[in-house]
Amino acid sequence: MARSRRTKQTRKYVQRFIVLALLLVLACLGWLTWLWWQERDETGMVRYPEFGISMPTQYAIHGIDVSRYQEGIGWSSVSAMDIDGIRIGFAFIKATEGVSSADPQFRRNWKGSKKAGIVRGAYHFFSPGKSGRLQAEHFIRTVPLEQGDLPPVVDIEGAANVKPDLLRRELKAWLDITERYYGVRPILYTYLNFYERYLQGHFDDYPLWVAHYLQPEGPRITRTWAFWQHSEQGHVNGIRARVDFNVFSGDSTAFRALLVP
Image 1 (spheres, rainbow, N blue to C red):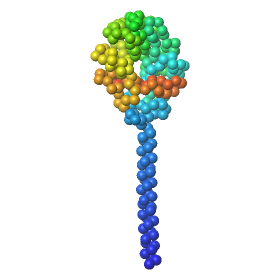
Image 2 (cartoon, one colour):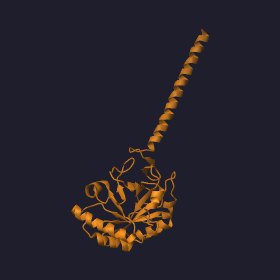
Image 3 (tube, rainbow, N blue to C red):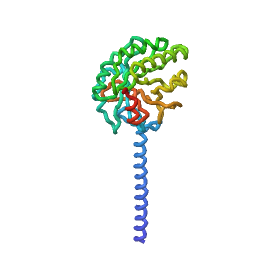
Image 4 (tube, one colour):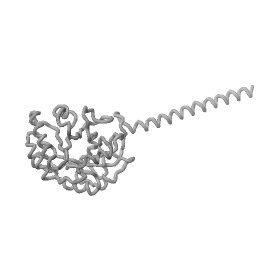
């Protein structure tokens, strides 16, 4: 009888041990799953605390765009930042707006980005209702593009009650003049809704840089795009303010082919 009681007690201990071990394994799996999930947001992109945002890691070439709102950029720190192989490979820098306004940080950013080894590009913020020719000439006077720079960019985000046909005509004037001067086809920047309302079916032979946030794989657009602005809340070493993040759609060979020859 004593031996039988000891056998029953031993079985109970073994069963309890097995149950506890299984619970421990399940708890560990749950914890690991939670950690994995914390690295992803609702879109399925990978979260990088160092950049302050979720990143679409299926693209190899990442970059930023800056203006006077990111004052006093430390470009050497931007260039040195490397998180799991993700680095800032290019920067679009605001140069001009309208027919006479120039970004006060442009020259500093233009020189600093090149010195830091970051591929640079300059963009013009287009003013609807103003002459596309005068805006292009203003950009040309301000921006000395060199071999290895990104093509000129026109940023168009509003219509200001200008009729669509007139808006597109003045935009085309800007594109034609800058292309003739620099010898390279300009890039067209806009956000998805504006593109669909005013530009869809036009300018399809220009490289497109489109803003569309919180998308898992790319902008939901029917045409081919070259650059995708996927966040406006990023962090980069050397920049105190939040900054826009972008990716290039292709590989390094396609990227080099896009640059000013």
